[in-house]
Image (tube, rainbow, N blue to C red; front, side, top):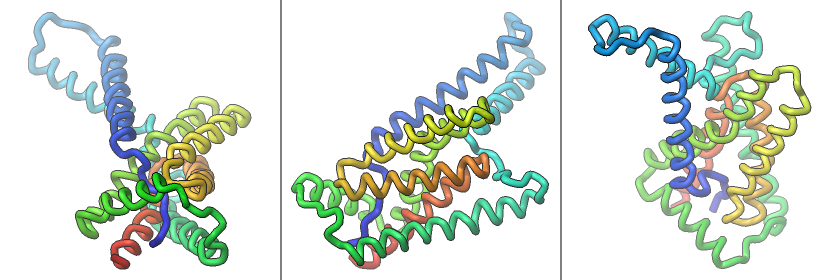
Length: 237
């Protein structure tokens, strides 16, 4: 059975993700509204302005989370940056991470043995949970349930620090290492190998997010890696 790190506790991560997005959206709406005039009764024009404020707040929330066009070289056309850093490089990086761990597992299968009955049961339960609905459910989980949720929770924090303190490399390094450590530890239910796997992959995901100043390449890389694992496990059923 192929090994992969995916969402360790999907209910916990979604419980953290949804309030975070909701809080940011509500705060930015309030921040935009407080600078405008307040009327006791909203007319049609006021409703239109309120809609624009909400749209601006939503866009600001998404940008704050890192949902922007990859821009390692802002002089390149948008379609080139999307094609290269949103599709090509993440696909190659996700495939490369998979091949690296597959080779390590083939060369040294006993490097990180899983002997604890609880961890063995957790791995089997995770595999069954994501493959029960078929290949489409597995792919949806790979990109939305795992990659999107986890990258918003972990890499968006690093990108926020990069935007706020772009020249403070000490702070950026500390925050990056902390998110990598936490990301690795939340996968501890599945054994030491899974923690190491998640930690090393988190370093690669953090690096591509910081280099492109965007969350999309990390989401795509994470999704491609998980998709390869899930499709492989599905075909081996």
